[in-house]
Length: 332
Image 1 (tube, rainbow, N blue to C red):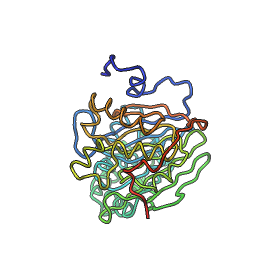
Image 2 (tube, rainbow, N blue to C red; image 1 turned 90 degrees about the vertical axis):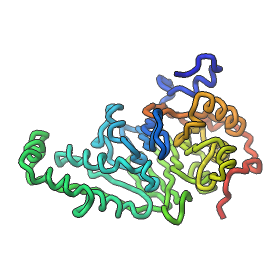
Image 3 (cartoon, one colour; image 1 turned 180 degrees about the horizontal axis):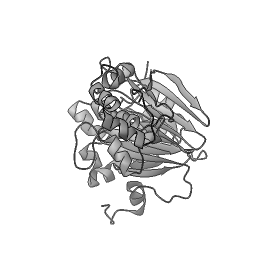
Image 4 (cartoon, rainbow, N blue to C red; image 1 turned 30 degrees about the horizontal axis):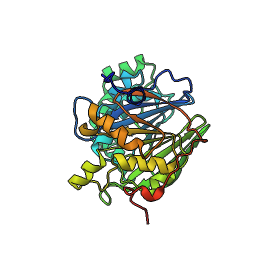
């Protein structure tokens, strides 16, 4: 529950922005936490709805179930973008992929999956011919009961095995369609053990960038340049990350605000938050600290919440002094 004693401007930023007259696209924050679960948030996954299409970014714990709570299913998606392979971003892949396959009847658009290096290997090891879940789908293909259930849903026999269009991607435009384009940018998080990507989605309605998990860097700023929305990891207060010596490879409160300001976005959505910064008092403190750097709209997201997105105000002048942004690691 939001404290009604907070200023009206704070209340706007702490609540889902429903019923906004200038809605152009919608962001559903399915998972807004990290790898340590608590009662309010766990893992990362996001949906963008624009132009009648749904785009899924990351597939963290319970994504398939959380989609159902929003009236969506895995069959409502033709595109999935994976930022990196930490479990809090991919743990629900088996459920999402097998649910989509199990409820398909044969006339669906093949699911396209994009991710950093080893995404193709990971999907094969999960649902391939010798994958961890091959026992499951082979039983569903061959057992009479499963065959009957498939036919009752409108499918025909013999039932095909699960197949997905998977691509390892790095930097550049990775997908273009009717009214949309997706660009990937290789960024740094826990290299060399894992590669990681940030993504930018441009549609006729909106331009939105997802940092994934990353260190603050020029690559993200360039990718987000003049975008409408930046959805950024915000692991903790910058001072706490630095006090604990864990700021490397993570975006904190001030660095998120600095990148949003330098990129010139209109809205900054905070995700992947720990308990300190997502508490009631932490939200107020974060907004106070970050709004002194970024003059646009800051949204402290809640898990399972939906937010209306809007285009940035191109007439706004934020008077950015890049020299003051000391928490961004400059790319060489």
